[in-house]
Length: 65
Image (cartoon, rainbow, N blue to C red):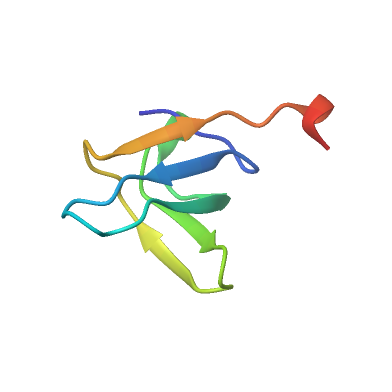
């Protein structure tokens, strides 16, 4: 998994009724874009995470702003 600052992580819910969550990568702590990442969720909560198989990276494009 490779991410850059500004990319979005889409974390799929793991149980029925659990909603997907989106987090913005605000810092890459691993080498060459690999985890762990410091992320900020939609509600403002920040954490360090190493995404699992239930996570998809949405790469940031300057055209999206």
